[in-house]
Length: 211
Ligand code: SAH
Image 1 (cartoon, rainbow, N blue to C red):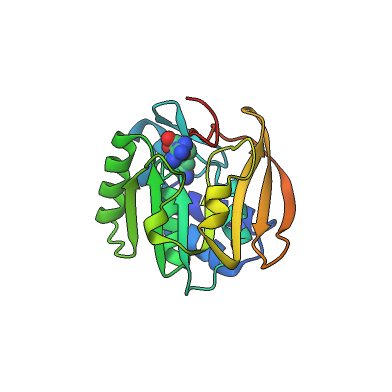
Image 2 (cartoon, rainbow, N blue to C red):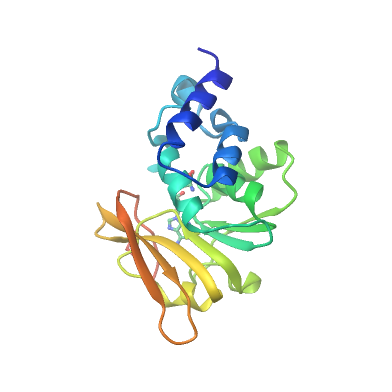
């Protein structure tokens, strides 16, 4: 089976659970095989996470679709991603929002993500080397924030970088398993929804896990 057929088949499968047509269209468009190592090409459209080196993984396509849908993007938003990794989720966000800021703490991954995203021609993405404070304060406020690693709790620093009405999607739990939360920022009391169980590599930082 060719990669185009495999991609279409994966999107068909995702459409049983994911209703946001724009998310499905983005996943039908972005070539995931370019974000995995060459020896994983044949698995690029299996619904599984894959190793991207440095102990990190490119998220499972279903989780990418679910998290992206949860952000409720319409096209005009400025989005922050914590954990660029391969850059695949970054590309999906760039298809669906106006501007994407993504931060990553491993320099080699910053470099490789910049390269592949540049090669694909995206002009609405900035990838930064992560600083000490979680997120990217210089670009705040964001309409949506996605964290692609697991946190022990919802970090205040990220809520501060979110605009009122904005959505923060983040896995929260132990180092090994988490619940996917969507926090909608309100003037008075934020709304927290649990979207189900998930497994992510740990979010590293002062207000998160130790390396
Ligand atoms: N969205 C990526 C997921 C990569 S795994 C993809 O689909 O490829 C999560 C990434 O978060 C890892 O690359 C890890 O290095 C990064 N990470 C962990 N803690 C971080 C932090 N505090 N700031 C930025 N990136 C972080």
